[in-house]
Image 1: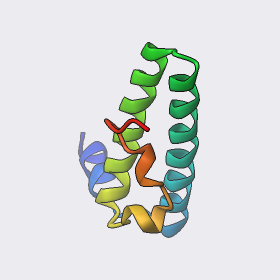
Image 2: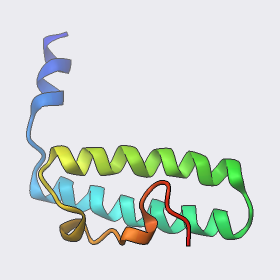
Image 3: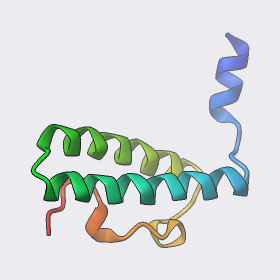
Length: 79
C-alpha cells in the first residue's frame, strides 16, 4: 500500500508530461470526430478521458497552452 501512495505523489518527468499532452491532443481530436459523427456516447466517454488527462497535466504544473491543447477541445464546449 505504501508503494501506491508514493506513486501518486511522485512528480512526473518532463517526458511523461509530454506524453500526457500528446494523449490529450489525440483524445480531443477523437472526441470532436465522434461529435461530428453524432456518436454521443463515444463523445461523452472521450470527454471524461480528456478531463482526466487534463487533471493529470494540471497536477504536473503544465498549463493548457504548454500542453498545446486547444480551448475548443475542452470538456463541455461545443463549436
